[in-house]
Amino acid sequence: MKKAVPSGRTAGPGKTVVVIGGGISGLATAALLATEGHRVTILEKQDVLGGRAYTFSEDGFRFDAGPSWYLMPEVIDHYFQLLGTSAAEQLDLLKLDPGYRLISEGAAEPVDVPAGRARVVALFDRLEPGAGARLEKYLDSAAETYTMAKRRFLYPTFQSFAPLLVPDILARLPRLARLLLEPLHSYARRYVSNPSLQQILEYPAVFLGASPFTAPSMYHLMSHLDLDVGVYYPMGGFARLVEALEKQARNAGVTIRTSTEVLEIETAPIISRRRPAAVRAVRFRKSDGTEETLAADVVISAADLHHSETALLPRNLQTYPQRYWQRGTAGPSALLLYLGVRGGLPQLQHHTLLFTKNWEENFKAIFGKDTFIPEPASMYVCKPSATDPDVAPDGHENVFVLVPIPPDPGLGGSGDERLERAADAVIGQLSEWAGIPDLAGRIVVRRMYGPADFERDYHSWKGTSLGPAHTLKQSAFFRAGNVSRKVEGLYYAGASTIPGIGIPMCLISAELVVKRLRGDTSTGPLSAPLRLAGTAVPSAPAQEGTVPPAPAEEGTVSKGTTA
Image (spheres, helix red, strand yellow):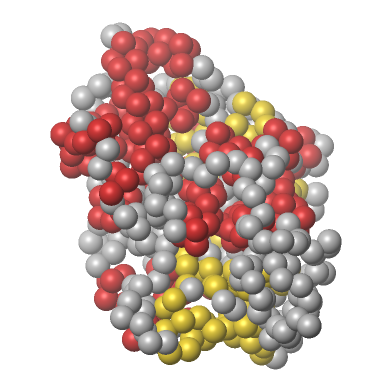
């Protein structure tokens, strides 16, 4: 006769796992752990999944709320391969050509960056004779650095440094030291002198939540992604990616509960030299205001790490207490504008970058001692209706504008008068610089989002839109780790922890949780596909909003979601 299993726990190798947050990293982690044979439940604060990558519709327009650049396609494909499928099976990807347009303040003409290395080299040569050959060397270095980063620095948990003491790293230590200590700004300017070309090589630092004046030149590897590999778009928008991740999670048996805000990670004391406590349960509040507790052997917080540590745990169990964050550097926040525009906008490509001439002062306004919303501001504009007819009604354009601003919730959020005035100035600047004189009068849908909204909706540290900036002290093994040093069974995923910011990094962070639970200290990605560790998988996932009963057999599984 089998021994009864307490509600919320499993017998045998499969563990009861609660994932806090139903964004990219939460969904991804839940699907992998369910496939590993664990019983997984996702608790998501919002009423929709996707976190910062959620989608909303208004008056016939469908807006991607956050991520809009599809980079590192092979990393995303590898994640799906772990689950026995592929990006090609899950998404309809289109390579953009041109990859993006650059509008520089004071420049006579915009610069379209084409798809394909040879054409990019020709562009550099046209704008600065001789720059093409130097770009070839720059991109060769970027490709080599990117390959090394994938092999050694993106996929380790840094639980042990022994796997990093290998000949290919040891032989490159002098070069690695130079790349870590020299800022991207000065490194890029040794290759080109044309201001627009310099900005093309430096702007990827913003993807990392950093300034090119402080980001290590190690990150010149990013140019390999947009200039060599190219920029892609999933038809239907990034909602398709979220839907694919949700489908994989549900197919693996994950239980997903939305409109459930986690209030506390409950712990129990244990006798251990390494950790004084272990996770016991997660307490959360439902949309009707009532509270519940869900027992757990393992908790994965894919929510903001600052919030997870300082709000969900008592002070004595915090690995990263408030004093840790006081020394840290937050990535920028953002003023986001979602615009539905009547008529065509041929002046804009799918991706358009507008950069100020006073590049350094723009970054000082965001990261300096005395911060403020820059004006004029460098900004990013996405017009997905250039590629995808389903995101806007006929005869209209879908426009998303992102202006990096200081990480400060005091700047306000949607409906705040100060931020609305800043939004008016952004629309005016875009109208003038892109040559769209009647832009403001053609806007039929307008929604705005700001730092206070990021703090309210995602408990985002300092209202940052991205996470901790990729400065030297917050990169690779210097970045916050993905396991609690004080609480047994507590792990972290998402942009706040290793390996860092961006959708591909969040997918890798999910894989790193699996490696932690396995005790895998290797530096490369896991072999695909994953193999089920337990003896049985539930025939169907539980319905959303329900708590599945404890499994009757050993090894049965159920699943979870992200922030």
